Structure formats: C-alpha cells, structure tokens
Amino acid sequence: MTFESRGQAFEAEFQHDQELLFRIQNRRNKLLGLWAAELMGLTGSAVDAYAKDALEKSTKAEVKELVRTGKVLPVQEEAMVELALSSREMFDKLVPENAIVSLSEEGVTTHEQPASEALQADIDRLVGLANSTTQKKKS
Image 1: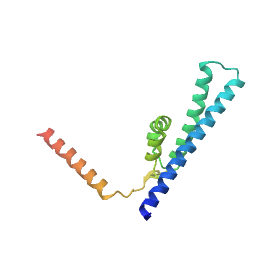
Image 2: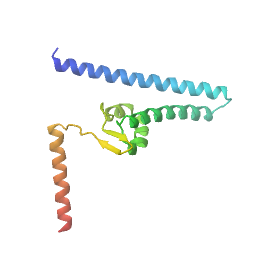
Image 3: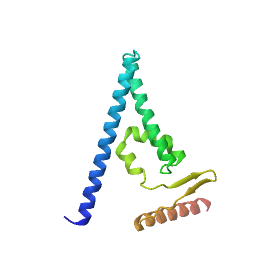
Image 4: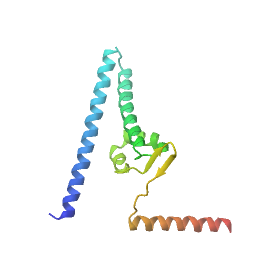
C-alpha cells in the first residue's frame, strides 16, 4: 500500500465516520423531538412537524458555529443550513478545514486559501472569458 493510497483510505474512513455521526445525531434529534411531542400531547402531522423543527434547529446551531469560527460566510448561512438538511455529503465537502474569514469589530478579514495550479488556471480562463464577453458586448 502506497503512502498516497493510505492517505486516501484514511480520508474515506474519516468521511464515512462523519456521515455516520451526522446520521446518528439526526436520528437522536428526531427521536428527541418525537418524544417531546408525545409528552406535549401532539398527534399526527403535528408530531412530525415538531420533530422536523427540532432537527432544523440543531442544524442551524451547527452552521452558526461554523459562521462564528469563520468557516462559513454570514451571507451563506441560510443556504448552508438548507444544504446540510438536504445533502450532508455535499455540505461536508464545501465546509473548509480552516477559517476563510475572521469576524471582528473592525469587520471581516479574509484569509487567502492557496489555490492549486489547475484551479488557478481555471479561474484565469473564466476571467478571460468574462472579459472577452464584456468587450464584445461593448462593441
């Protein structure tokens, strides 16, 4: 087993563990919501709505923590909650390991993320296309 394949195996295991943890937490939150709804005497669709609300609140709290630590921009908060509720795998892929911004009383400070050469080439290509399209529209 090469060092690279070993690293990929660890990444896959970590991703699997995170997905499993998310499912466990969601199930816990849903069961807690169902139990609380039963204690409150709710029945039918009101029980499901209450459990869904409990799950949504815990997801919102998780995303708020990501905003607080600078891993998610404040303007992305609502979209990230929706993404976490609909596709946890994609949500986990989009949340960076390190903070991308620092929030303080002075405002927002961005942290440059090193771009790979391929990503930088794609960015340069898209900027060039956008500039050429703008030039054509002006003509």
